[in-house]
Length: 161
Image (cartoon, rainbow, N blue to C red; front, side):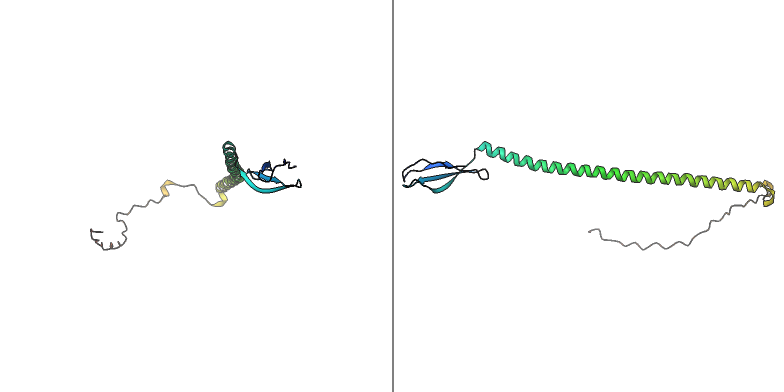
């Protein structure tokens, strides 16, 4: 970028725009000497228009909001994936437990069947039950009493508390 200046007297100055820095425009005042070389005098800042500052502020706020929303979205996505994995693991465990339960029920029923078939054979010495030979116990009329513990003495507290 080239800086152009017009020849002015020592008492007057001209403004030549320079590159923007961080949203602030710098204006350079230049004085042209007798030999034709420009001599910078000072830098003055010019404020951006109000609408531009508001728009820039809005852009920064939307950038921050976007960052927060993306972070929240990633959190929800991670939680969803994690819960799906845990649910799959627990569902597999449930399937294994149900399979083991079916195996145990099958083994229990086969043992019952085996005991029933063995009981039917006369070599075991088991006889079918006969109601005439049943022993009937009479209920007792006295209930067994346990020694009762003495209740703790009641401590009276004043009503003022």
